[in-house]
Image (cartoon, rainbow, N blue to C red; front, top):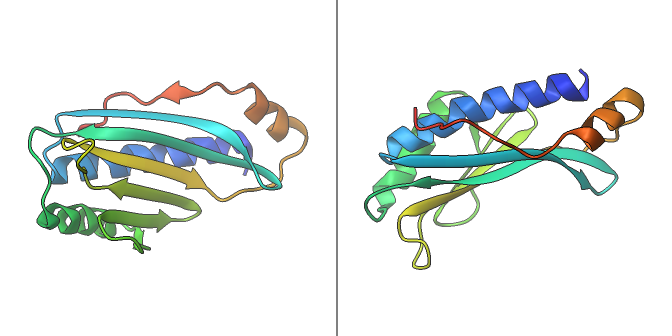
Length: 138
């Protein structure tokens, strides 16, 4: 697949996953940006954002987020307490439960595998700007 096709696939996966997580935690606002970024030996599609909630999170919400994403075909790769880390194809998504510094925001990060690009694919990613996703509350 081309870099443009890969990006469309990643965007579709995030547009599927983030609303599921937002519904699981009763998210009130979702902010997500994505971009191509250099990585060791190539390029990866990556992004970050936040799911804002009205109340502080509890441990049950971690399980609810994980269950929603696993039901949608993501694989659980969680290694750190207070996180839900999942993978689908070559896209990894990590959601971090709100903490003392940000008690009503779930942080999220995602990235594809790093890959070497040449020609038109490299030109495409070098010219692609960071872009915001539309509201993904679901």
